[in-house]
Length: 295
Image (cartoon, rainbow, N blue to C red):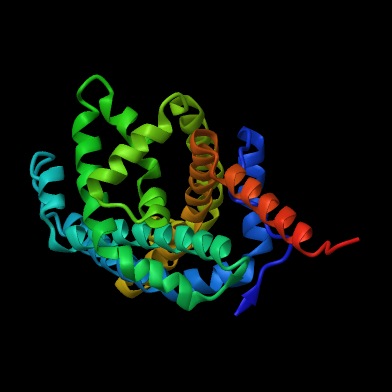
């Protein structure tokens, strides 16, 4: 069990800069326990996603080099998406993001409820309780958002609204429909602020993920230069797995930023933290009065 220091108050209204600052401060202060939870629960799924993606890319390069496709039409996106390896890789990629989100939000819930004492086993309870609903919900929401993009950008609007979905589901333990309704309630009047936070956090995450892509990029360059041994399928699969694993870890930045936005909106809409402070003051006054005795 790890004890976090200088505990951050999650139930607090924050402006744009404060949410970004809180995101990186949280990572810094809880690096060890957070890293351990991520390594334990995210790594296995991310590794599987990387392996299947590497196998798919290896076979794709093999087909291209063998001249399997005689025309650009044959080399169609449809043919690639029907590849079993690609489908499995996409599934594990989605699952990896879901597990990252459940790990982060589960960690934040334990951090709040247990006053900073975060145990990976406690985080696992949140993951185990929500993994099935979170996975199918994410797939359904993803499909809806992608299809809705063609409806005058409705998909972009929904993506921002439902970015809070997993945070709401983990913290408030709501069902599919209730979680969606809660997202719309919280995001009302805060859509642009949430979009801005997502964009900035996404840019920071992307820049860092470029570093994570160095292993795969190096192998691709060596292949392009026809360096002996660089054509090895094992080398491609290993480098792709490492890149996928490291890139998945960078998701923590965006997920944490959305987590702080969720708590910010809950406090703004419901004032939960303020009510808890008022109740605490009331209890403190009662205890003080009871201990005064007679003078």
